[in-house]
Length: 383
Ligand code: EPS
Picture 1 (cartoon, rainbow, N blue to C red):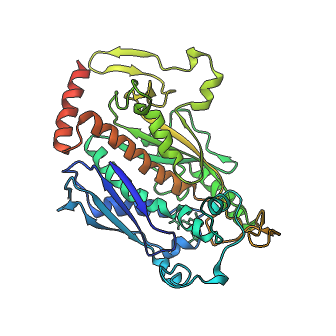
Picture 2 (tube, rainbow, N blue to C red):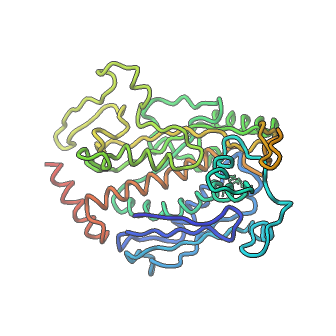
Picture 3 (tube, protein in one colour):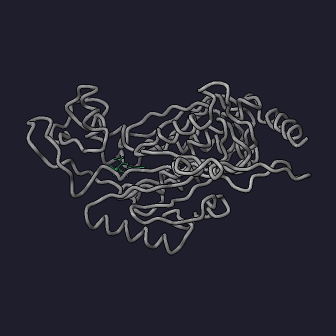
């Protein structure tokens, strides 16, 4: 599956077209809209989320609740567009008073205007805005629906907001411990969630913003997805690129990741044993489910670091692009913390990579054929 998106943050709508979708995937509106809703909630979001109630209109590619195998076009309206029709008009002359001239450190603003030669930072920020990730989540819901047919489930949780960390046992971030939909910071631990909320409140009061860390965990994967033979087959690289494509993500690790660098080999890998009737077993999952660029049948554990949002109500220093005078960076209505939302976006990105890995290995035309091929493969490796 490949997807592309279009749409400005305060334009009419976000759209996505998803191609190379196997036929016959059962899909309901609630699958897409449910994920859109999960992305929208989350403690630390700003006023915009009170305006939007994201829903995807399906324009093509789904008939009677099943994918046709044809491109799926989805549109998510921006309710806020009604408030931006002058500033974001398709035609006519620019509103000079609405021009943004103070680029925000950390955002795409400055490099963006340098890149395209614009004198209005809004030309950049409208598309660099993480609003675009709503369209990715809609696309990802189709990947998730395919994975469901393959017996795979994808979930996430937040393990750090600012300096508040949930110190969970390594390897405990499997879906069983990640039933966190009820928590508005997506952290499974109630006491830590309360401290995370307090940190967000404190940041808001100080005109600050906060980043954090989240984990995406995937269960039900067969071994051997991805590949060891060529660089572009390696699943670590493909997953890493997908998660790093999400705005504000600055680091990704798999399993014990960076901590592995400090350990001797005997404490860095996952010993193999065999049980009749159960097959190959690992008692640890330090590798995070990936060895040699492939899944190894253990839960996939992807951890990512998100930097704090660049829009600060107590702004950093910047330079006016008209006068070149020192000036405060521009203030826009914004979120204080979007780590819980980013975790849901990462689920979508991970789901799309894994859906493609299944389609490569088991055939991408029809979900029925994929399931048959998967059953044959499972039976072979069980022998
Ligand atoms: C964003 C700024 C805020 C966020 C937005 C991302 O929007 P606004 O400028 O309209 O207040 O709420 O995120 C979303 C709209 C969304 O759907 O996630 C930014 O500058 O990146």
